[in-house]
Length: 479
Image: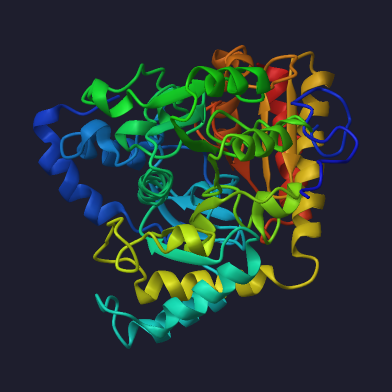
């Protein structure tokens, strides 16, 4: 019997309370010249001295990038569309800090969007990668490292008895949806508004992440047929889910959700929500799928399912299990996973799946997380960070709410509470943009969107946290 969610205030949405758990541009014709000059300017190692904040080289690099890549980036949220200003081009990362090509240093709370839970460019991980590279970077064939990481994942994650490694979270969610449909013989899937499960066609319906950041409707290029079987409900709304099952009896293969939403900002579940979702899926012979690409190994070593005590049928993973290299995975009960080719008829494949570099980085990242006190430390520093920012906001007269679980957090410029994407959209995004730009000048790098969660790491220090809180109060007084 799955245990219920407990703890004072746990999962009650984001509020302002002191509850611990949840509380200018170059002429396009000059782009070739710009690109050449970047090569000469990109090294910033010689810029040792403290200097005034400038993004001149980032502007030059980004101007050139826009001539070669759509929007100048390879993932939309990086373009700063929702916060304005100049997107930053980075040169290096180490520990809890990032350094851009202009020589500015930042305390980082993006963590490469989640993977850097032990800190950027960890010495032990880099040393292991160096040794692995001597043997080759990709085999296109089985390697022993796949066995090692698979065993670690299976031992850690309650729902996983077998696992398939892929190359991204999007790929993991594509595979798990196909598997759920193959196993149940049903085609309809329920997802929640504001939850993001990658950019595969069936999931680009009321999605979060960059779709929410840019204010895009359902994406052009997605055929109606691809999303016809995708049903949506507001997050934390049990009645809406029950109605969907009532109106689609015997047709729904399962429910996929972020157990803690991170792609519409940080939104925790209400105490009864995940328990009810587990019950409803069991009553309807449907599968429960946790998308733990973000929460896996971050909320607890066994992910959100360990933290909340709810075991889904299938789970997707990514980010942390690759230690900063491209990776993804999906896994679950043996009887379901044996549907996957070549054990079964459901086909899915990948050229670089299980490559030795990603496996190595993942193995050594998970080893670090196994050390006693890792998650207690994340809990402590994230609590201090979030409470400090909320206190600073209230002290300076702003409507603000926020929350956290272990190494994942978020805050909104609204009174709250925030239970779903509709609540999140009440946030003052214009104020967030001003706050964001102010924090950049103070040397703090948050995700460039109100609708993205933040991440702490084992590399963040007490000094990092105190500097961030002081910077936030300074900026909040000015805006």
